[in-house]
Image (cartoon, rainbow, N blue to C red; front, side):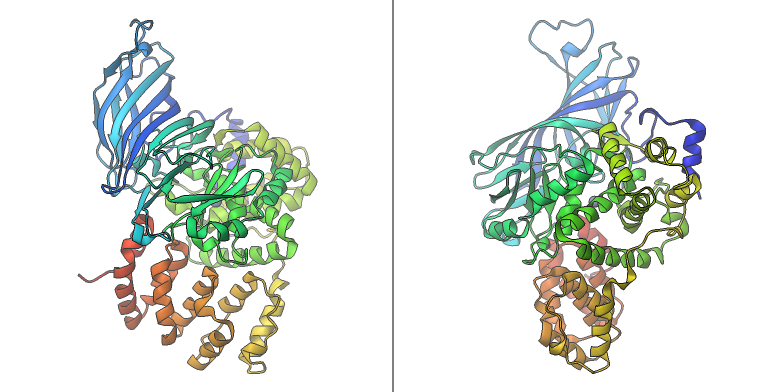
Amino acid sequence: MRPFLAAVILSGPPAWAGGVEDSDSFANVDQFRVTHIALDLSVDFPSRVLRGSVGLEIKRLDPRAEQLVLDTRGLIIGEVSQLSTDIVGQTSKSEPIWVSRPFSLGKADPILGSPLIIELPPSRAATVTLKIDYETTPGAAALQWVTPAQNAGRKQPFMFTQSEPINARSWIPLQDTPLVRVTYRAVIHTPDGVVAVMSAPNNPNAKRSGDYFFEMTRAIPSYLIALAVGDLKFKSTGPRTGVYAERSGVAAAAAEFSDTEAMIVAAEKIAGPYRWVRQDILVLPPSFPLGGMENPGLSFVTPTAVAGDKSQVSLIAHELSHSWPGNLVGNATWRDLWLNEGFSAYLESRIMQAVYGERRATLEDVLDLAALRAEMAVLAPTDQALVTDPAGRDPADAFNGITCEKGRLFFDYLDAKFGRERFDAFIHGYFEHFAFQGITTEQFLAYLRDNLLDRNPGAASYAQIDAWVGGPGLPPDAVLPAATAFDRIDSARAEWLAGKVPPAKLDTRDWAPEEWLYFLDGMPALGAAQLAGLDAAFGFSHSRNAQIEHSWFMQTIRDDYRPAYAPLQIYLKSTGRRKLILPLYQALMRTQSGAEFARRVYSQARPGYHPVTASSIDAIVIIKQ
Ligand SMILES: [Zn+2]
């Protein structure tokens, strides 16, 4: 175990994240810091590229530095020029002159991409202004291009970005590290018939002119720069909330997410004022690989979140909660990801309690704990600490149950040890103190020590805190959700399995979606007649809840229940959320007949999947050519 808190105490709290190295970026942030980005991009659907320029306003920290190093991946760089007024000794009164600067692209790393090295003359000027002409390539990891046939409306194409964690560099040359925060402006040119939206205040009534202007005046890390373009309609759901979706889905999405304003109000009571003006939700095409992405002011979500019964709204609560951990006070590097994800998962649970009641929040917490335990069972002890060594790893792998669920349990622990009132005051103070910064684990711990631990001696020791942050597994004093929450589901399942009650006679009237999941996930191996009985009674094969379908298909694959394969095929072709489909492919590949089915379905479904999803499944399903 690494004694983090002891290390912080010995060295004193770092004043800021200067001197911190981000091993996932090539940028020389101690010599130059980008402060503002100005994008001017055209969206070219037929070629699947973005083309245009980026202006960078840069603070020069080192007058002797001769090279600016930016992150790129797969970008084609046309020209780099510098505004002459930044060069001391040259005229600044006359018209601005752009001076071309030599540049080179370094050797490509498979995870990090290529450094873009720009030669700059040493200067005492405090700022540098650059313009880079560039275009993206069709395989850009951040971009997905959806053909009209692949989306709901079937008339217009759709494109969207997913920059987190280190994919912003595949569509913008920049310092791609959360250590650096920028404001941005963007002009986006689109074909007719589609609208552009970004992670900045959007105008729902913008004229469909083909030119869209955005301005983000709050400093955000590069991974929160986001763009989506499609035939979008807007529907308001509250004073500062609304949904964007394709025409056919906008009414259902507005009904599903009608509680977003209530969620904001609940979160503000815990974490302080909401700083992002609006909280709109963009429903993406089925190929969106994630549950959601907390782009500021405009959460991107999977269409599986629109289940018709508000059963997936914890996902909305999660993305909203990132308006504080992550978007307002974020991780300095991906090593510190638990500060974003664990804290957000904690806030999410608090929002769910406030808006939907204690019981539902507890049910979700129990399911999440079970998933964490299953994940920990196959993780090496060194990978079970909240902070792990990021060297040589893809930072995308850090998004797991440890940073999220174990992180949440750490915040639950602090909440329980120090009491709700004191802990809420701490949370308020924390977001005020570090607002609009990326911070390290060590900075968090120093703040925790000064504002909670030392002010309330005896509640939790430094060693106990270290066990959470640097140690494996769950510490013995973890505060866990009540294990009895699902007792009535356990008895219902047992009665049915014992043949005492036929499925249709089970009293399921007020079961929450989490209880249905638990009911299915706890099943032993079943025979064909039992499965047919369940499906006839509850229609699992055609549930509108994609998570319940997922659990049902996991069961039917394990039991090789053939009648479920036709609906399974439809599900695999129409769902792009990686978390839901990857385990199904894994389960299918365990048997020969399952593998044949998986290969056949995957060869048809793959063109519709996001590159992130496809690359994960490629590693499991090998299609014979
Ligand atoms: Zn998250």
